[in-house]
Image (cartoon, rainbow, N blue to C red; front, side, top):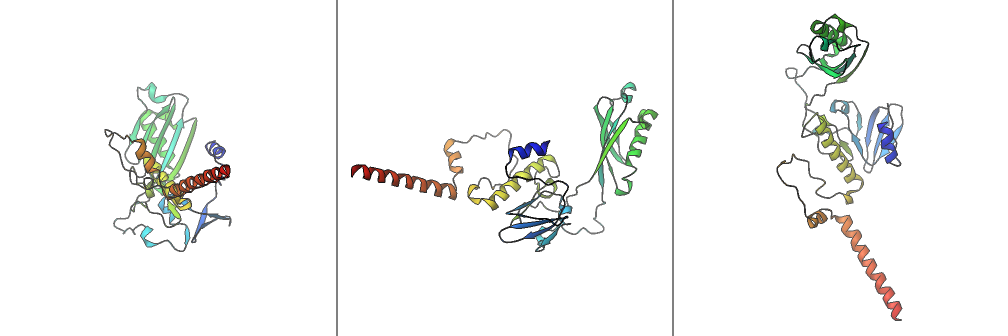
Length: 276
């Protein structure tokens, strides 16, 4: 429903789902993307809003510069690959409430955090290794049963989804590579990295960079400034004159100059004809 509502407000826009990109060809005036089905898509700029480790799996032509590659991790400092699973367990009644508990549960090994998201339903997250992916839900139920009783072993319904835990091993990629623009919270965010705030920041920066590639005349110097945390006690009042001057750029000055000159020329032409 979210994608359908977005498409209703955007004309000449198409969204392809469940289609993985495999190759990115970078040319002087455009970028060409090849998907796993062999279809080619051409655009003036491309925003890669995927985790940085997924970016490394794409085939770039020409090859991506070394400045954009994350540093190689040594064996001593290499971090273990981890997964995070979100689970939801639904029961016929709030078993924990009958025992006088709130439903909040925390375990250290493995790291499990759960809470009562609604009546008779527990939601939470568990951090685990790829080897434990298929037995993680059973382990969660066993630990909950040890805490709240054997009734926790028989949920009426359960749901779980597993995602790769993002690890930041590089500096934020805030500068585009010509017509290829980086995004995502873990790859580009400078504030609240790997969190929702970093996703919003990276999305705004990517949109400005893409607009600068497609229509640079509508991007002002103020738009190109990187977002910084503002002082909540500092007033942010802007005068009308300052707001007007901040919107001036080469495109606007040229357009309105020709408009005024053309208007004066038409008025003079009409005035001369009326005199004659």
